[in-house]
Length: 152
Image (cartoon, rainbow, N blue to C red; front, side, top):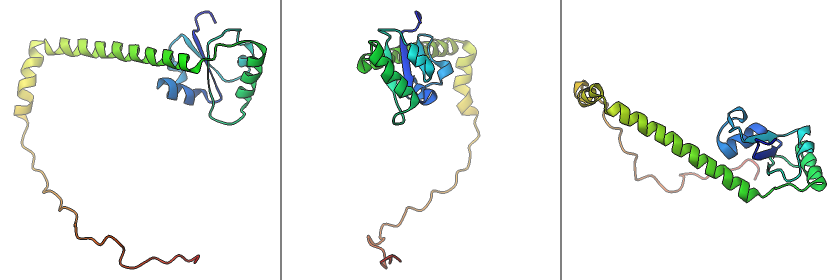
């Protein structure tokens, strides 16, 4: 576990992964590991753990509580959650930089500049359907007849 910098302990790995990082477990960064079974009992002392539960008193939660009593774990939720948020911000910035580089490269091509100016002009005019009538504004605020419940 020397490459693992955060362990997510949960009773629903896929759900926790999607909620915390917005991706499936198999797409998580290499520095994060998700545990939901017997491996929880083997967490080393001082392991950075973020626990997230979706049901009451699951088997995974029982194992985690037992392990917490045996060894001291680094379970500072706020600190670990912030680490995830920082990683997501870095990932988003890197993705934005890639997109920006690609857009700059594409817009600097002469062919792309020519096509950008002529595509809209070459479009044929399309007939549109007439707009719908606006909804009536003189509807009564209360129904005309009061509905009766069969239970009263």
